[in-house]
Length: 239
Image 1 (cartoon, one colour):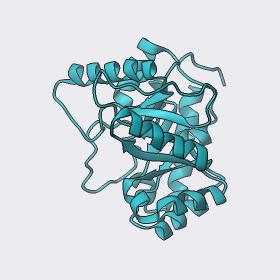
Image 2 (tube, rainbow, N blue to C red):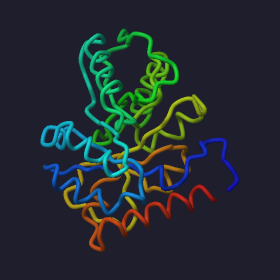
Image 3 (cartoon, rainbow, N blue to C red):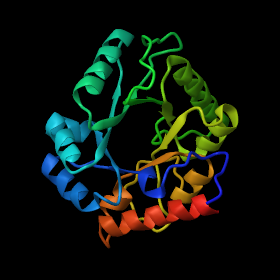
Image 4 (cartoon, rainbow, N blue to C red):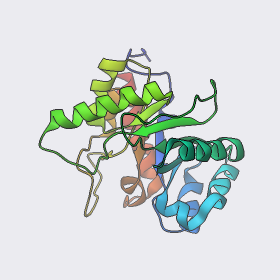
């Protein structure tokens, strides 16, 4: 594969994060277990964390997986810093965690260099649509600049903005992209507005893709969906 200047050398199978957006730990583990070996990362969001707590995180670690803890922490800097310290020191299964920043004056204390936990700042949720595309892009750009100033490792943003961030910031931020909808997926009552396909996200410079319902609700089963998405990622990387 010829490495694009927009891409880190991450294997296709390690770029997919499967969102375990289900209401119980038992359902999450039933979904995750047959996918282990195909994918490395699973997202634990607010719904599942409230249902399964740290036990589901540890159980995923026991399957050999790593966890993207998507709690979108939002509080004063000291509280967020202490919460992140708990995650980093006590939960080695967690590879990524998300925070919101309150305003342009929000600051976190210095983070240790080379830390294991990757900190991601939420920019604009992919469920938020706007007729003013440039306005959304400007907010995402500003929040990314702030995230890098904070010492965060990257951001959560739509694939629609990933290309802009790569142009502005190069490979500095990790870009994690939700709102992924393969062309073949059928998602009823979809609340995602700013969506792209796996290939489009990769072409624009995304490092990781977060996919939930197209995998969970695939008529041919989650494993089939994961294999198809990884295939699309690999094809995009090879193009």
